[in-house]
Image 1 (cartoon, rainbow, N blue to C red):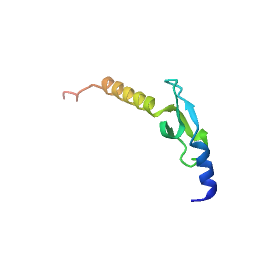
Image 2: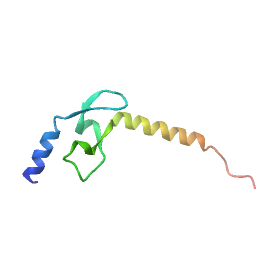
Image 3: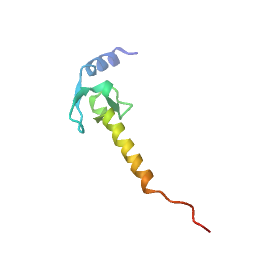
Length: 76
């Protein structure tokens, strides 16, 4: 591991971000998903929606999709 990588990571450890859905301020590294894997040293590479809100959004959309496509095979 290079010294430059450690310095960049150290600056991100104490950053916080406000979630756009729930409005709570949370820790950047622990509570937000990394969206750009190649750019770990930048705060812009993390999403603006916290992990908990993302999980809720995805499970709601999956449930709706399953309910819309209830159909059976045609009776030939």
